[in-house]
View 1 (tube, rainbow, N blue to C red):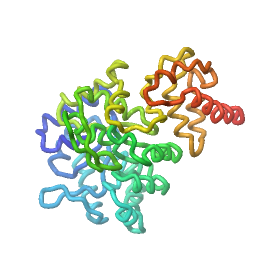
View 2 (cartoon, rainbow, N blue to C red; view 1 turned 90 degrees about the vertical axis):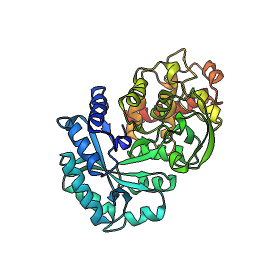
View 3 (tube, rainbow, N blue to C red; view 1 turned 135 degrees about the vertical axis):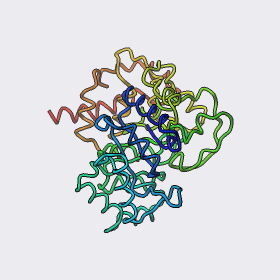
Amino acid sequence: MGTEYLNGQPREAVGSVIHEAIKHGINYADLLFTFPEYLDNLGVALQGQRERIILTGHLGSTVKDGQYFKTRSVKRCETFFLEFLSRLGTEYVDVLFLHNFNTVKDYDRAMKPRGLIDLAHRLQREGKARFIGISAHDIAVASKAVESGQIDVLMFPINLAGNAMPGRRELLNRCVQQEVGVVAMKPFAGGKLLQTGTVRVAKYQTGGESFKARVTPDITPVRCLSYVLAQVGVSTAIPGVKNTTELAAALETLEATDIEQDYGTIIAGFGKYVEGECVYCNHCLPCPVAIDIGQTHRLLDAAQQAISDALLTAYDALPVKASACTECGACTARCPFGVDVVAKMRQAVQLFEANLDRKL
C-alpha cells in the first residue's frame, strides 16, 4: 500500500486505513514524505503493529517551507531520515530507498563516494535500514542501478499503460537474474487508468514514454492490479489509497474471479502490446493436461539472458511441467496476442528440464 494520499488526512482517517489494511493482510507500506503531521499520524496508527508490516523510507524526500522538497544533500537527507525514525517510533526501516531518480546524471552523482549511496550503506551498517533500494521513473536509470549490484530493491512504474515500453521486459528479467526485488508503483498510472475518456499518461507514470490513451469503464482496480502482479519479477504492488473505500476496491483483487481479473482485452484496447509476446493473461487456459502456461512463460521469459538456481527451483516446483504438453494447439488458438504457445513449451523443456537433469 502507498501512503502518499494519507498526507493531510485526519489522524482518525489515517488510523482506520492502516488498521484495516493490516487486518486484511497488507504487510508492506511505502512512506514517501517527511511532513511532521504525516509521520506523527502514521506513527500513532502503527503503534503495536511494527513487526507486522514492512516499512520503507526515502533518502531525498524532505520538507522546505512547508512543502515537499527533493534533495541530494547527504547532510540534509540524514537529518530528515533520523527525524523520520523518531516520529514513527521505530529504530529502522526495512527498505531505505534512494529517492526519485530520473536521469543518469543524477543517479551517477548519488553513487559517487560520499554520495547518497554511501549514506545508505552507513545507515544499513548502523542497523537503521535492512535493505537498500532505489525509486526511478526511467528505464535507463533503473537498468544501471540493477546492474550496479548495490541495490536490493527497485521501485518502478508498472501498469497496463506501459506494457510495451521498450526495455521494460528486459529490465524486469534482469531484476530476476540479479535477485533484485521489484516494487510496482503507480499501478493505476497515477489514477489515470481509473478515469474515463481520453487521458494523457505522462512519462513518469509509465517509466518509458508519454502518450494519450482512451480509458473505458472496464478498466478496474482489480484488473489493473491483476496485470501488475502477473508481471515477471514483481514482488508487490503499492496502490495509493486515501480512505477505506479505495482500500477495499484494491483488496477485491484477492477474492476476484478469473473474469473480474481478466486484463487481456484491456491491453488490446490500448494497442500497447507486442504481437507474439505473452502478457500472462491466461486466455490460453484451460490446458487439457493442466500446465500453468502463464507461470511457465513467466519463468521462461525471466531465464532468457541467464538461468539461475532460483528459476530452476521455481520451474521444478510446477505441478505439471512443459514436457507434458501434447501439442494439441488449443492454447495457441485461444491466445489473443499471437503467441506460439506450443513452441514456448518446447523452449521451456529444452531450457529448464535439460538443466534440471544436469543439476540432479
